[in-house]
Image (cartoon, rainbow, N blue to C red; front, side, top):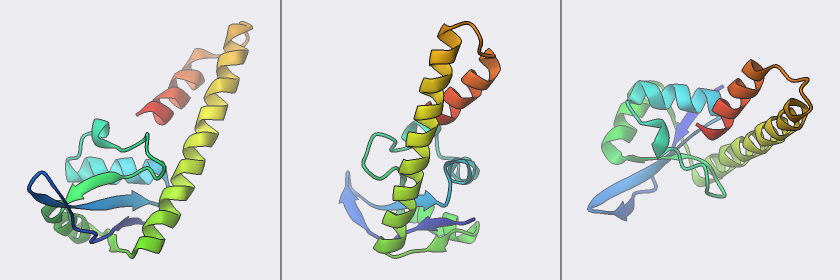
Length: 118
């Protein structure tokens, strides 16, 4: 498993921004936490989930072990994470249906929802 960061350099609000992705959502959030990024900054409602990071954070990410990546790698990882999010959503929905019938254990449901909506 790996974490990737591009060098897109998108100018916004006086800074240059890049994209941070990983092979899995758990790995991405764990790495983002090590960088000091807040979970609410995760771009989960976009077609390609990711964290936006400034150039200076990109340098720190590379120092912590992230790999520099091209657009194809970033988009590929983001697509896989999107699929993972959809699967978590389906599991949470299924668990919710089961919970409504009174046969579901709440802890698993809470864990799945936390993973999905974090």
